[in-house]
Amino acid sequence: MVLGIENAGKTSVLNKIQFPNQKIATVPTESYDIRDVKLKGIKFNVWDVSGKASTRSLWPSYYKEGGIDAIVWVIDATDPDHFDEARKALETAMRAPELNGKILYVLANKQDVDGAADAETIKTALKLKQYQDKRDLEVALVSAETGQGLKEAMDDLAKKMKIHLKNAQKDEKKT
Image (tube, rainbow, N blue to C red; front, side):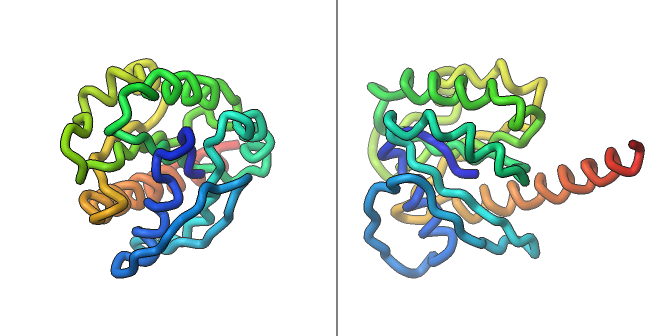
């Protein structure tokens, strides 16, 4: 599931991952869009969810659809005025029991723009330390515009997903 507040670049990130050599114009997502994305031999069923404040209350109903193994949180690294809003939205999302133990992969987007925040600034702004003991957590510096860092981040996420899924299968066999 791809989450984040509005204008973070969630849809643009997905477009760049799916169509790396194409420039695709985007419009704000109104509710959600479901796509199949294949990375490193894993087929991901990806939910691109609207980040508008008026639609965030719907997020928990999407979690209940099940099958969530990872949360990809996209943040506009060039917009520190909205870091606090992004942190609060992330904290609200992470309180959902359906997301307990799920991978949290933060994409600090718009790294192609001068002044974009670095990984440590993003970790501090989102108060990510509170999650690191409860789940696999990564922060990647990316650009949906240029593709910078996206392939590496998605390869890493795919690797983590394989491990996560293997561990989940082991846990199921124990019960």
